[in-house]
Amino acid sequence: MIKKFLQILPVLLLSILISSSGFSQQTDSRIYQIIDKVSAKRIESDIRKLANFGTRNTFSDTVSNTRGISAARRWIKSEFDNISDNCENCLNVFYQKDFVTPEDGERIPHEAWIVNVIAIQKGTKYPNRYIIMSGDIDSRNSDTMDFEGDAPGANDNASGMAGTIEAARVLSNYEFENSIVYVGLSGEEQGLFGGKGLAEYAKKNEWEIIGVLNNDMIGNIEGVDGVIDNRTFRIFSEPVPPTETERERTMRRFYGGEVDGISRQLARYIHENTETYMPEMNPMMIYRLDRFGRGGHHRPFNDLGFAGVRIMEAHENYNRQHQDLRSEDGITYGDVIEGVNFDYAKKLTAVNAINLASLAWAPPAPKNVEIGGIVEPSTKLKWEKVEGDIAGYKIYWRDTTSPTWDHSRFVGDVNEFTLEGIVIDNYFFGVAAVGRDGHESLVVFPSGTFS
Image (cartoon, rainbow, N blue to C red; front, side, top):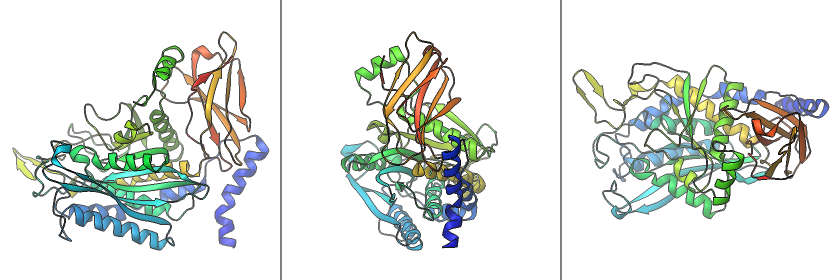
């Protein structure tokens, strides 16, 4: 009883501060605990294990227990099962799969099952609201159609997969109001088939997705340009959903919001949360769906209107990506274990873990946020209140040229507020819900106006 009380004491104290002071920005000591619990040694062990399967090409051996995609996914499932055993069956672990044939894409050499490994940690209050962390199971060499040659894929993407498993190990020791999904996705190199399958599964089962944190290459610190950087990482996010309506496009033209879609708000959340709890890191928000002309497993979720971002290293080494193992002209090619920095992979895993936890502890975001104040010396906002006991709401605003939310005001448990002296023409605005423990929802950009 005493131990349990000590665990919740920081939250109780924070709740008292919120109630008595009208809310003062606080940090949650549990987040620092989560950072400390992430292990570089465990991540290294998992990366080595995945790389030692020889190849994880989606169409590789499905019979062997030591080589190929099936051996890798069976091992991943066993790790999720072990984690669940250690937390009294707190994870629901299962395979989710879809069948593909050569008619589904030019990178498919033969019929096969695309199998994702999923572990769901159900939320106590909002079990149908999900925050997802993903890594890719599969690997490839120079020729993506070569499913027999060695393709260890140590960084691309054993690092992201190992980070996802480690996040599950750490966060399974806590309870959250919202559900967390840890998933290994397959078929990324052949056309993002695993992400597409899970996104459609989520849509069919009416999941309310808070956001997707897709991790693809989180272990390399030495760029092909010679830059070495173990602190900077990139967050890729598209500006607006591809599913937006004609009305929404028209509103953007007159009221703004060209860079304020749901995925961009998720990126800003990760950026701010990382700067708060891990100030030694340097998060870079990249205003692009993915790298130039390329793609990742968050895109299928974006295609269906879900928020999703890609988290990855800042400096890529193309000599180690999608390359046969070889040496030419003094250059060593191939995605081998020597190219992975395990401490850096630990840092980016911690970035994921603290943002998963913060969002999983946060209340739902307010709905139907509207804005008013045309030709007035003030800005008015109103919104639909969140069900349940929360601390209240926070209004954010920023210069129209700023990439981040730079100003905020906690306004209490109300459903409308007027910012006196803040002219609507000069800023962008948003509203977030604030929980009793201080964790906030994603910021919601206004979707309508009122007079």
